[in-house]
Structure formats: C-alpha cells, structure tokens
Image (cartoon, rainbow, N blue to C red; front, side):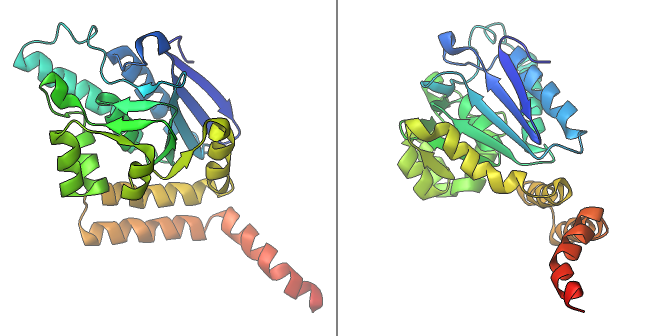
Length: 259
C-alpha cells in the first residue's frame, strides 16, 4: 500500500510510484525514502513485474532534494553517517531493482532528487525540466550514491562541472550528454512515457531480469570474469525458460506447416 506522500498504482507488468508532496516541491523525507524502499523491495519478489516508473506530482519538481525540516536534527557525525546509510539504502533499492526503473522528470530534479533520478536506469525529461547536483549551495556534497552514479553516466569532466558549479542542466543538454534518454513536450509526457516503455513491457520478464542483472554488475564495477558469469547464467535461465521455446515455436511454425 502507498501513503499520501508516496502514491502507488499498478498496471499489468508496471508499477508506478509518485512522490506526492507538491506543496513542498516533493522533498525526499526519510519516510518517503523508506516507503520507496519498501515498495521496491516487495516488488522485487514479483515474477510478473517488468518495469517501475518513478515521478513527482505536478509540473515544477520531480523531487527537490532531501527534506531539510526532516533532517534538521541530524547534527553529529554519528547521526549523519546513520542518515547516509538509511537514505543510500533506499536509493540502492532503486539501483538493485531486478527490472528497469524509469525516472519521469515531470519537473526539476535537484540535490537528493537528482540522486534519485540517476539511481534509476532511464530518465525521461519534460522539456522545461532541469537536473542539478546543487548540494554545494548548502555547503555539502552528494552522499546517497548519486555522485558515483553521475561520474559513471557523464564522465569526470562533466560531473565535476555539474557539482562544483552547482549547475542546473536543461533537458536538451542532458539528452546530449546521455544524462537523459528522451525529452518530452508537456502534452506528450504520458504518451512519450508509454512509447518508451512499450518495448520493455513487450519483453519477457525473465529476459528483463537477465538484462538488469548485467546492468547492475556493470554499475557496481564487478570484474570481467564475474560479469561474464552473470551474463552466461542469464542465458541459461532464459534459454531453458518456456518463454524462449514458445518464441522458437512461433518462428519455426511457418516452416513446419510447409512440410
């Protein structure tokens, strides 16, 4: 079940999670992150799941970073380390989700919201949306794993530019850099999302899990031999699955009918 602050809806193969705090620009409180983690942890066990979409309510913000009021009592080094572990754990549930996770940036993703966006596998951005690692404006750095993700996505020079300048990157530039996978006009947010995820939903769930397992291995920087082992294990699972042989039968059936 969702909550007022995290809305949950489902369709066949698809789970939608919406941060619903528009009056405060969709900040990521520890409660919201905990609910996000719980939803993704539960979803991971569902063999029918093929895709997760995360977005914010409204048109101004996807997520406006950590909730400063919620975090106001985090002062000591011990409290800060505990907060980092808790919040990073929530985003790790996004990174480790066994099926593709799409961030639909209906508005700006800044600070911790940008970290949530880059924790996802894909980012679809509204034309007017921006993404920014603007932590420096509060005299802090990224800490929920987003900095590491950013360097992997856009490279050292661009990531350093974004973080040291606290720069808000517009959608068109994000697309050019590979930080966004598509830019959508206001009137096509839903249709553009549907078009992007349609091929994903058309895949076998077993194939999607195999593809995501390889993506996780690459994100985590596993060594070559381990990545190869994961790839081969995925092939064994998918090759021996009934879905594969059903597809083979569809391909071969015209030939068989001619015999």
